[in-house]
Length: 547
Image (cartoon, rainbow, N blue to C red; front, side):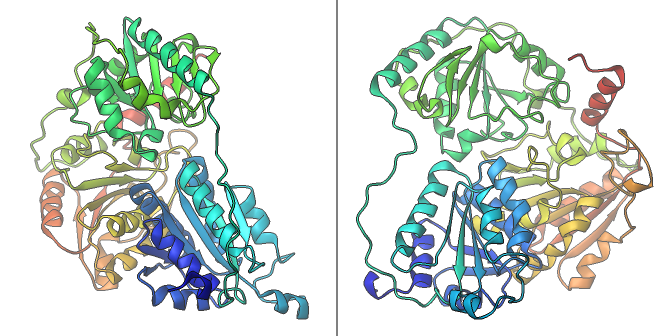
């Protein structure tokens, strides 16, 4: 179709498709229905969820796997439900595009009070401006193409969310011819600074006696996994990941020793990292969570920081994007390090697991899952104890672990499982959720049923918010009792299992993996049963963490 004859809605769909998206998640509403109809007749597949936040979480997970994700909702009542997920995508650098409908401009002129309006007609746009890297209101047909291009390109470049408000009277307006314009550069690196930074980095790495690579989520976002693997292979430097960066590489990699998470993580890994004279931070977000609830003890002078926003060696800074230098560093004179005292990888120290008829606990869940997770599994966990008990589970593919652990929003895992299976249908979503988090968005299992997906959902039923009980307990940590294993009967799809013993868990998991439908495993745990990782954190806090 000639671009000059395209309508704005059609042009937007075309640019989404060209950016690699094949699925759009959302919930329809009258202000976005005409655009929905165009999407429905396009090569894009609509996936309608039960709730807008679920749609946004699914689109976020799709973005993390596919490189770009789209959620489409109606004005305000839909848009504001997406705000939380947009904030999560911004915090954790996920390339998510939010499209929200809006009243037409002639309608606004004729009526001061149209439904879904809160205070002012631009409230929705103004709110999203705070938590996106680019936003626009497509109110002017002569600028619509440039604005769509600008928002999408910024999202793809900066790996953070963008927002497009689409008034319903603009959807069928013909696009105006595009005005040629030069693409703005996010950062114009000076060649001399580039060379200086590369040389200084190589000198710092080569001179180190006990270096370690700490890999963060930026390596995945910027498709630098192969470069990381080559870097470790060429230098023989051990690799750890952060919690948010868990599975940045296949965790069977011979250089990977475990997750560093302050006192939350493995003690041997922690001791090695904290005694390092050269901690190479690749694509990391230095958050309180990744630093083990601020229990990390890292020497600032030993930190070599390479991110998409920063490049530094100790206090020495370079005006370049450090993470993008990794391929250049590989081509230079890096030394092969002979390093003593590297701990045996956590995966090699995991106990073997033979199930019995004894009661299942959080401690036995970890080796049990470790023995069952395969190469096609994507483990998606909720924040809290679900993610903590997963730190020592070996993930057998790069990017095979998802959890919004920094932003720490609950209710992410079930809709995220839908997004993952839409992005890569050959993968299996294995969801680990507490009962409290499941009650927030668990209804999205019906979306999985509608689109014939087969996630395996493990609901840890400990009668409430188990992560909070060791901090301050009270009736506010209790949740209503559901029969989670009965949910497949309600939605008419899949199989449910009630699990009390180790053997029941293993048997159910094997059946679930063999099934082509949804499986829900309700695992009964004692209210005070918490993982060893969470227990370590609670014990440390009870002793008083040194500041």
